[in-house]
Length: 616
Image (cartoon, rainbow, N blue to C red; front, side, top):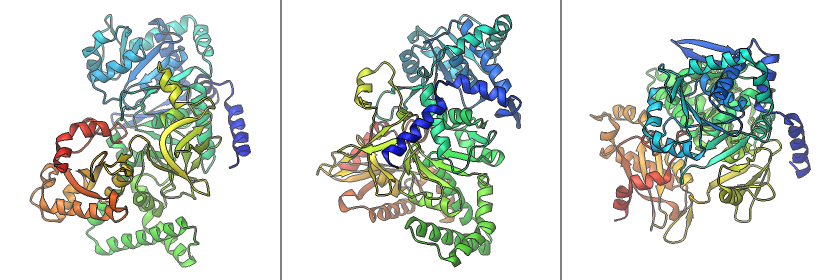
């Protein structure tokens, strides 16, 4: 798209969101679709729902309740809760009171809670249960600005510091009954340039930074995303919210986009339960981080391997072969022969449609992978089974959305093209630069870092190295600061090596090592679901991940995975040695972020002894 075309689209989006805030859009939905469902959650095994009118009424109650606690324009409200209606109600309640909500990851330890809550000087915190409350209590002496904590569940005996969610809403109801105009006056003072939220980065390379996302950023990006969809949005379309709402990816898709398009948000409180929720919700669009797509792919592969009916097993294998062959031709820009198209259509009815239905993605019109690089093999698999899969790219600093592959034209190995109205170019050193209404206002209380990251012409300097092909498709090579520079001076992409290693189903996670080292090595973690099944097939006496990590046959199999990965890289990039670690990496054990990306700094520190042993 030419610069002129981008400017025209940007101007159109500017006009669509001009002068509006999240408060305006919630009011629009409540007035136009008041009785239609907005939020859905499970209680006692049954789905419960709030309409748009009920949603806004509860937001008003919380806003007035917060105001009664002294929360007003310029204040901050921390929210620590799983994906549930109260999280978004509390979020928008703070916004309507003129304050800024700040969602915290559920995995944060007390010290991390203290850092963020103190940094933004939150006046009130909304927490889900007593488990979360305890983390605040342990660091209360470090939070002089935190005046009250609202407890959503588990009940609360009101005291000078804690009150219940119902008590907060009750205070708000009384205030609304006494003076509804005060609520209207409060939210109408909110401006498009005001912060809609602070999103603290998960700190993969250092202390978290608070990214200021304005109302205009939120609505502009939502409108841009909507224009990238293959089909017009349908109000009430089901969406499954399960990634942490403290992460910009979920906040954009599960909050701002659904608010803008009047979608119906279904909450899944635990990320590991998403595969159980999908068949119940059957979302029209679905976003996931690579690790979840990898797990879904591994699950299908394991089910196929365990299929006792040889005829059925061969049928599925043949179908996948046909699907992959067609995808590879499409990726090369070659026509798919008529015979292959017919076979693909037949297998879609006999095999692929059943796989999509089993996953709960049979109604999905757009499936997106983002937040980290995904394996081309995994992406190819989902394209082969007929899922409209698209890899995208974005940072918290550009409200999570910057590029996406066009549905039906997805190019494996790229993150697609810029979203409507967004400009992307490369700096002289290959760094990806982004400009548009999605680029945020900067970092809270950090002018130096803001000036370093956002230049005077409005370009966001992403810190990612990329390339752009002749057709405008963008590839992300690696993080500028995460490139491995070997002792011999060779620049190597660790992400590329890790993707290649994880192509083997036994490898759940991998971290490439080699910065200022004589050669590249890797730390490997077995997939906790695939490894036990593989062990049973091999007749191994133990199936625990801890025992398998040191089993000779497992080591030999991982060596084959390493050998295969090495076939795809240059001599200097090859993994010379590896160690299989005995425990899974999780967000709770701190090797992964809440969205399952590697925390390289943590891994390097935690496994320093194992790494040093490799190079002795």
